[in-house]
Every structure is written in C-alpha cells, then in structure tokens.
Length: 90
Image (cartoon, rainbow, N blue to C red; front, side, top):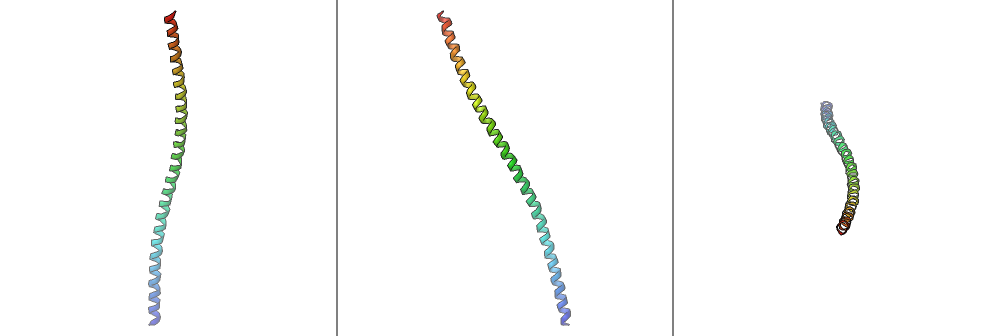
C-alpha cells in the first residue's frame, strides 16, 4: 500500500510540475513577444533621434542662410537708399 501511495504522490508531483512548466513556457512566450515589441520601439526611437538630429542640422543651416540673406537685404536697402539720395541731389 505504501508504495502505491508514493507512486500516486510522485504522479501528482509530475502533473504539478508539468502544469508549472506550461505556465513558465507561457510566461516565456509572452516575454519574448514583449521583448520584440520593446526592441522594435527602441529601434524606432533610434531612427526618430537620427531624423531629429538631421532636422536640427537643417534648421541650423537654414537659420544661417536666413541670417546671411537678411544681411544682404539690409545692405541692398542701404545701397538703394544711398542711390536714392544721390539721385535726389543730382
């Protein structure tokens, strides 16, 4: 009788371990899915950061170009005013 009880307990333990392994496998699958999603989000973040850096560089270049053009326009206006004064004097 004692041997049968031990065998039944062993079978019960095997069944419980199998159920636990199934739960762990489920958790592992979920973690793999979550890990892949996080990896993709990180890769997207890296791409977004690269685009932001490029846009920042472009903005700085455009700001520099705009400042140069503003200086050119200011000089042209001054030259135009000087020419207008000369024409009025002549």
